[in-house]
Image 1: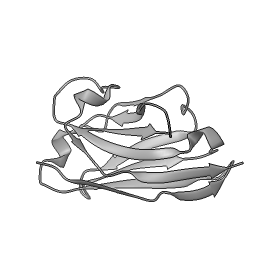
Image 2 (image 1 turned 180 degrees about the vertical axis):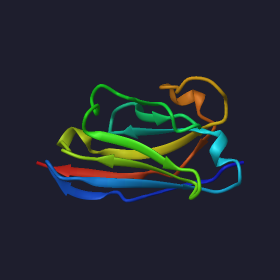
Image 3 (image 1 turned 90 degrees about the horizontal axis):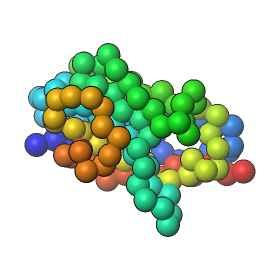
Image 4 (image 1 turned 45 degrees about the horizontal axis):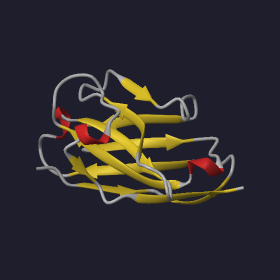
Length: 125
């Protein structure tokens, strides 16, 4: 069982930056691939970025590639999402998720086993 707690969301102007953190409980954090998803009002939840358990591989949605960076610190049981050049369309609730299955980074939410409660990111124009 893994519990995930996101933090770092807030209100920022377009062009600004935020860094989200997701702290995980448990000793097995290093075995999980981790993902960030987001859900805007009236829209379905969508994949943003993922990182493998080994920390060797990352994957990004086209909409954030070059602006967002996912990273993890297994010693601290934490995964991060650095968001730069933010746009109003990045406004959403951001969730981190853990995938306990081995294999490539999944971009579908049903592949993930554990979820945080979400943190709101609002980008003003």
